[in-house]
Image 1 (cartoon, rainbow, N blue to C red):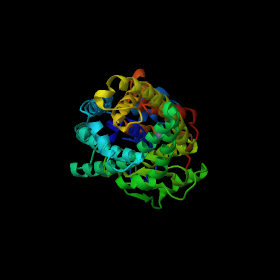
Image 2 (image 1 turned 60 degrees about the vertical axis):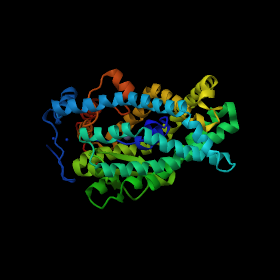
Image 3 (image 1 turned 135 degrees about the vertical axis):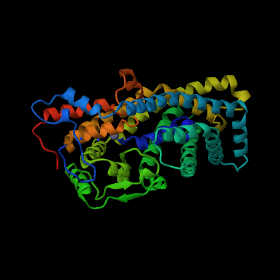
Image 4 (image 1 turned 90 degrees about the vertical axis):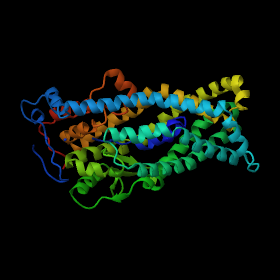
Length: 442
Ligand SMILES: [Zn+2]
């Protein structure tokens, strides 16, 4: 939704809040707990003839040609959508500036009293609403039509629209808040605004992460503490053994929106919690659930949230520096015709957002790389803690419902924010090969 045009900034914020998640998309020995039994392909079974490459291939083969073609095409279409999203967003920015609509929105906001922060907030509200309306066609295609084409969505259009409107309201409140803060900083610190702006943005990001599980996530899904049973017992046992505080694991009704399997760690400080979705609970085996939950615990124990936020802050600082440079050049040339005075003038927000979008588009391999490195770390943690190489490999295969299983090297570096399915399966089979005599954690 807003992520398409709001200069990627909120997209990045929302993505970061959501990124610490291992979303998912299944073989002989096993225990049955969740209703689904873990099947291990013949060539991946432990024994003297165990071979890492053969075992990996045995898992990869679980994906038939048709499904593979489908997930490849879904993923590759997504690459192009990043480009179309950028171009669409630039078109929206050009429209707002070139028709002086943005200047008129600013003039309107200045009729409300004398306080500049209020002008900024009122301008921001108009910008977010008009931007959402203008980018609606692409949002419908990307978020609704395409998801249904690939059988990933479960919502009716009405229910989807309901979520969009909720998202818009959240966007108005949070977007209005951060824009008011950033424009306050720009006006106070002038040439150095990009440094202070980065600081304010990072603190804001931590604030959003802190409130998200309590105030934002429940607007879209129902969160409940997992009831007593073997799944909860094994998760709590791993949590206790790894120093993770809290008495509860949460589950939520993601099946109201999607068929995807996922879990996540959200929150910060007092609000941190680990949640898994109902698709994971209903569609996978106990071994897979343990592997996924251990991955999420890895994010928590290894303090990934703060590390990623800090590294992202560094990327953002360069982005703001680029905006500071590009904005002045563009306004010197076209400012008069757009009715934009300077970088502290809200009428220039479409230009600000456009420049930041271009920067983040170019920086995609860097932001994906930051996340991917942490994801690989959490994968390693997961397999060591859960000791479920087959659960891990199976769940990595399920994820290939919507992620290309074997990307090329360049594709991986540019577009992947998680290790690929093949890399994950290979890693778990390598672990299995080195731990042939060990038992699962529970
Ligand atoms: Zn993860």
